[in-house]
Image (cartoon, rainbow, N blue to C red):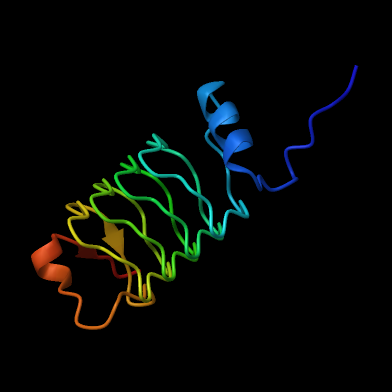
Length: 129
């Protein structure tokens, strides 16, 4: 009987979706740079410390997802749902946030957003610890 090594980071979209559909939610440190996750449902997943740089997350359901310390630089998050997400110290530099739902998402002063991004208008809450 083989044991599954949960320490190995997820590195393919197919594996991520398969495991999510099987009930797993912990995908911290996933290596999904350049991944096509358009319209994916990853509601409530733990993607902390994940590499999602330049990923296509258009229309993805990331509601309540933990994206703390994740690299989302240059990711396409157009029309994605990040309501209630954790964005502590996440890197969203040069990300496309057009139409992204960010109400009640939490960030901190170490979260990096695209230049001229209006946190208040987006409904984001800055948490002080």
